[in-house]
Length: 96
Image 1 (spheres, rainbow, N blue to C red):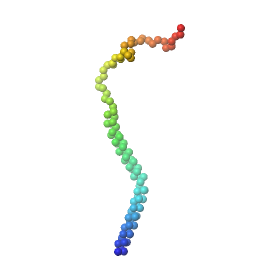
Image 2 (image 1 turned 30 degrees about the vertical axis):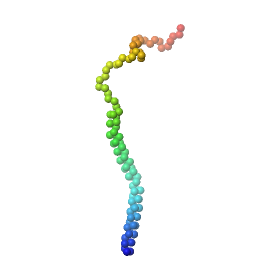
Image 3 (image 1 turned 180 degrees about the vertical axis):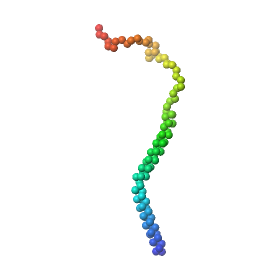
């Protein structure tokens, strides 16, 4: 019975040491893991945005016409029927 108690006590001590050692290992390597995760996340996000941009731009840009026609005549309400003026006159009005 004493040997069983000694084995259980030894295993308990080893378990405690393993938990403490694992905690120290995690704390000591935490910054390196965070930096590695940050780099991988940046790569994934950059790749995703880069792959999505061509599709977004293609969908947002209107199609350019292949053939265009002549100019449309302006309606008379905006001066479409007015005769062309040869000169505009003096820049400053003259006083009589």
